[in-house]
Length: 292
Length: 233
Image (cartoon, rainbow over all chains, first blue to last red; front, side, top):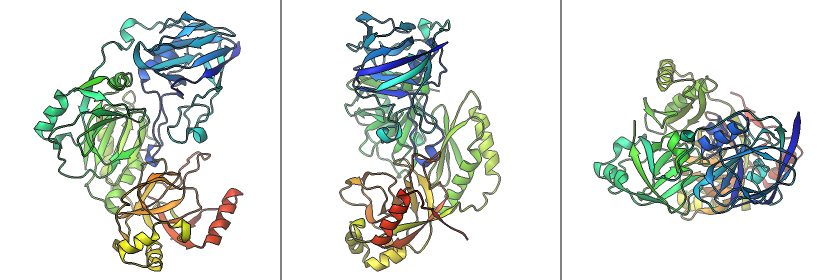
């Protein structure tokens, strides 16, 4: 038995997009990966409603949408706590919730983290581009029109009416109350750094700047003694790469980053900590540690 | 060649760090051999490096390293890819920086067009925006610096120069390249399974067309009757 559930967006929220695990295999022609910023939480949302980990979810940023439900199905919200409610009642996160005709989902004050993930059990009727439903950062209206949520957008899901028994243990939930230390691996040009620059980078607390987005996090702060000996010939960059601009400012590339660049690559954030960084907001402080 | 770790799910293969056709040939050969192999999630070939993404649940970093080393023991065959003939109108509004390029190079317009269309250029890599192909190398006489102030919007199809490189804008984008012409062809077509026409290792031979021919080809593209011209050698 299947049913159709429709999410009607009365308000789109600050930035609400459809994301899956990403658009892989087109980076050799310059197409960004896209995909959920915090893949761990996105996957957990899908698990709770019985979907495959690669299925689409809604990525909701800081200020959430207002959604009117048509039909019935199951939903789960993970990641940032943006005070979600259903018909005015608080929604328990990390647990499936049965949706009924006419339900209204709203979000309130952000309590922790930056991005919430909303999964609905079933098959999402979203037109993919290059095998992915993830919103394209460039030309989203032409390439992935259904994946960028606007006022009066509608998302249709052929929903499951049965729910698997799936419980997420507390230890597996990202702890968003204590963010700020991010583990990295040395990058391709790391060995060219002076001792002063290495010390300066790892001893500093950087502030995530206001012009940080899904393409990259710019960090306020400067790596001291940064004088790259040679220019980097344009080369591949990937989510998690920490670039240092010629003026010494670090930029951490995120899910929507372009595929090549000519800046010095100091390090790479490890995958699990990139999920944590994605939950940090402009104005927050971040420090990096080297890991194995 | 050295293989560097690049995060926890990619490797960076660095070749001799110079921009040269023979080095890039090795990059593309390795890339083409790796694509489609189990556990490889993506590749980013560049001038003299190759980024290889892998799924650690399928292939370990060490297995991938060994695999790359094995491929590298085989000599890269000479593969010129496909050579596309790309019509470009170098006239009037299609060439907003022609005067500046004349000044910078000391050449007149006819000489610039003759030089730019004189030889096929290699697609060294794609990047910056989806489908932007870095073509080179330009004859030395044509090489000129980027514009002092980049444009906020360069139209789709604009053909520009920057240093030793030339390129075609696949979509409208900001850019600082010197614009000497425009092609009516669409190098980026999102409706296709492979939306990007020019692949790493392909070649592009530019052909000068008039404004009238430009409009004719534009119409033919609109009606879906245009066929890309491929050079056979």
